[in-house]
Length: 398
Image (cartoon, rainbow, N blue to C red):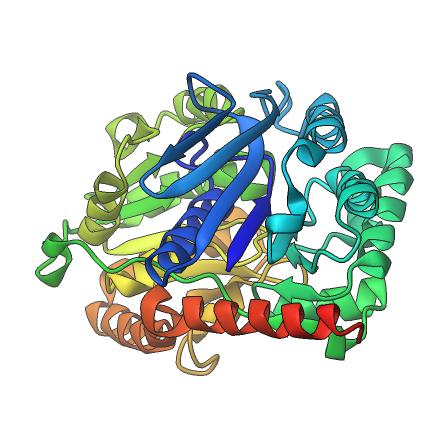
């Protein structure tokens, strides 16, 4: 198959979880004999069209910063990307593609693609991939009165696509509940992960080390863990928190750490250049924390479970992390309600740092939960079958 992916941010130049797992999916499909093309912002140097490691990249607009100073998405970025899709995607012969996988976010690009398809390749099979579903309430909280535009556009996308690919059961449920998409038009296939590096077979845990890893955005709530940390250090003096990642919240988080006089008990490592460096940090930790209230899946959680590192994660209506932690009864200590205060986090962290048996049980349950998420044996073949099914159904006019 000749497969196209329409998504603004392109890995490895932009290192978010969604970008990373889409890249890994494309690599697996490439290795299965398919031809994969990315249509996104020009994050790479040189020409707008290039091929690297057997993957094809096509720029439809310049590389524009995703986030403004306040940590929210810039409205200019998705509009510019949508304009690029509208004006430049049609320059490629879309009729030669077997299927296009269009990511719903950042939404404005979906109607742009819809117009281009109608003009240039009206019979081209396509589907819409949802990493998250926001819904009207979240749009209102996120953008105030302007949020009605985003909510309407998200609803339009949901009604227009012939089929929907969700990366978690929680996202599929929200798509059905909030946007009224019939479940028979939805397929749930999680994103997978690449195999562990060689060092992961014998990880050396550093006593008291705790890690947060990911893009430092407001909804990730790293500040909640910083607020909890003085109480953790008071009861576990050797505890050290490593914050891995960069983002608009970094400066504010460093100021908060200074105000709380956390000193050497918190270390900001920034954006590490290589995946193995991030995995090494996770493998050396006794706990990985995921306090984010909005996650479609959370790649870093899957990687931690793969490495045998216990996870403590926020669970709630807007995050799907709980779908991947393992049996809910066996992993009760891994789950903490999204609305609880910092003290609840400090109590849970202290409890697990002091109880090695509990950590072992969580690690075992989590490892079992992710066994069926390997790209090669499970996820890539499932995506391949879905694409083939959609090509057959849409081509026959069903």
